[in-house]
Length: 356
Image (tube, rainbow, N blue to C red; front, side, top):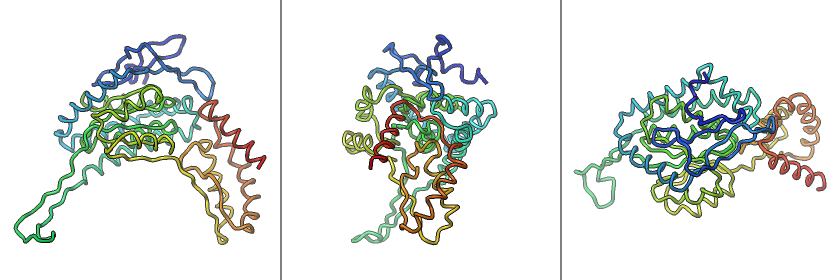
């Protein structure tokens, strides 16, 4: 099991591994000489180090994807699908499943159940996109469907790749929300540059190695690691990026959208999600689902329940049931927040809510 991921690490110093980045089919060390330390929210201690890339290395990653995509689009769809299915199978491998589950727990503070679920759901997601890609079809249009034209001409509409896709994933689902961008891009013939969230990058780098060992050709999938403040603007405005897929905060999404110009954007930004409780609701079931929705992974999900809306009479009946359900199951869902800063932010919100 350890040998499976041995190539992604460059050295071990005091028990702390330094991880490489992936470019043009090779695991590499940045010429910057800089690394970023990943602190475990569970232990508060360093878990590993990642490379801090230079702008030249970003250029190399994008160029690698650009040239590799021209050959990848000619690879038969069936072969692309088989590579993705093999990657999904590697995720389900018992040793890899245990390894990745434990890494997610240590790196982003998930419970064991949530971490294992993410690994397995990611495998299912990759399988899903592999099969969905097989079903994509073009269409034909007859000329008399357009004003001023008679029959006699046929237009053929085909689906073609965008080119080089920039994937930007968040910390909270480093496997699932990386795969949700990488897998559909690959099955449809695109090249990918994956900007990994700093916290969560160790887990995501393991996913990249699984894709590599499943048989992806060099250059078609590349990684970029480093802080958004240093490389973000350069990356999202790179002239050879043809589309950006982003999951993250609304504020960051707005900033990216303003800078990118006229290229396709596929964004999933922060949510503001209420639970709306009507007067005929099963309040026991409602309380259970609200607690699950609000506290699963300590609320660090864009789909988490943020607040509850109900008529006064319904709310008064619901409150004691929420407290009862929280006492019963809430503690099982709450692990550490991903960082000290995140914990301080939540604490400040609690203090403000009490004052209000």
